[in-house]
Image: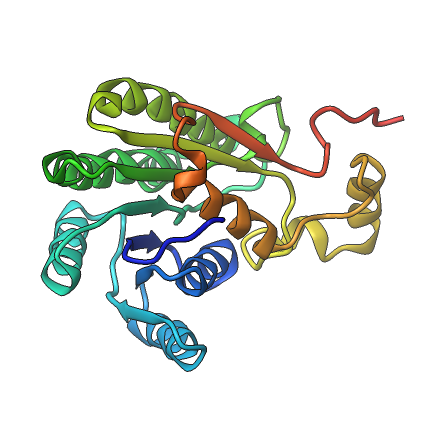
Length: 255
């Protein structure tokens, strides 16, 4: 039902965690995948696994905080496969774990450039090609439920993720006429290296599980399944939305 055969998917931050799961799942559904992260060796390892499972993928290292790197990435995707049907902006950073008044200008700029400006750049590079081919396209930004409430430790990260969601809404309006759909996924706590500080401590994990109606944290493959759905024709009438996948965390009763 979530068939992606014949599609080309470009996934940033796809050497581990949610991004890797998305790349692997989309490849399993028939997409040709461009795997990208900062380290070429890590990308190559993911590609090797995809190919071993019968999928098709290629690797291209990229620092998404550099516009010229993103231009090279998008050009490599076109050079290799001739098009991009699906763009997943997954790579993100959060070098700060503490209150906002302790965030330096340098850290703020890094968070906003990596989490917001890079997606703005890459979407603007890829969406016009999707529109020109007149075959539609799907863009997915990986956001976070940190955008939906105040947080004493992840404030600026949450601000950046809220900005991503507005970027999604505006891109959906601008490109909808060309049948380019743009959506975001806002995961809750997922078992990844990126979020390790939030789930590795048994006490903190127990608190998070108690606050989540499903009673557990999520796994990367669960976000990958949702991303694959949004990339597929099954989601052909969904655009401009932020889909929350958090086990009910944002609607649960913390008592």
